[in-house]
Every structure is written in structure tokens, then in C-alpha cells.
Image (cartoon, rainbow, N blue to C red; front, side, top):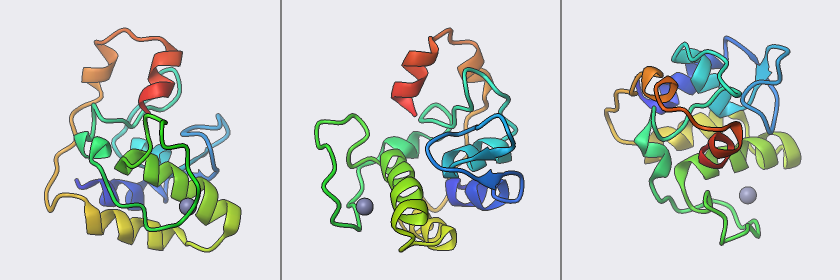
Length: 135
Ligand SMILES: [Zn+2]
């Protein structure tokens, strides 16, 4: 399942809520939607990340002109872009739709990608703080 497919499937499993993969009330961001599509369980917050989808680390050209913190780990990565577009454009400025975000992810992701199972995450003890840096 490609990342864009996971987000598209996951959107049917939760309500859209910015800035969190899981608001503990049935809502979450685009990455949280993808997490639900993979059947990830709550583990220090949903953590759809580069363990599941190495693609999230890929460098991408940001298709917006927002002034983003360039020193940030996420800057310029697909994962950071998804979080940014969901939080700041689908929600904040409302100048993107979730459909547009999913289409954009589809345009930059590999043609095929099989997500790694969540077991890879569960077997690796990490703090919630560390996880939040990864996602
Ligand atoms: Zn932007």
C-alpha cells in the first residue's frame, strides 16, 4: 500500500484533526490517517514514520512559499511536508483540500512501496520525546 493510499483509506477511519496523529478522540492528521490504515496501535501516540515508510525521509520540493524553519529536521522531507500541508494549508489557510494533499503525495512518492510492519517500531524501545522527533 502506497503512502497516499494509506492516507486515503485512513481518512475513512478518523476525523481530520491538525497537529496530532491521534487526539485520543477519534481524530488525527494525515499521518495519523495513514497510521490507522496500517492498523498501528496507540504507542506513545500513533507513529506513522520513516520506519513504516522510508519515503517519509525523502527530500521534496515544497510546493508552497511559506517561511519554514530550515534547520528543522523535517524541513524539506516528505513527512514534514505532509504535516505542514495538513496543518497549515488544509486547516490553517484552507487553500488546500485533503484530496489535493493526497494527490500531491501520490505525485512524489515511489510507484510502489510496501510499508514495514509496526512490529519494527514496537521492538525498538524509544521515548515518546524521541518518537515525536521522528514523526
Ligand atoms: Zn506552506
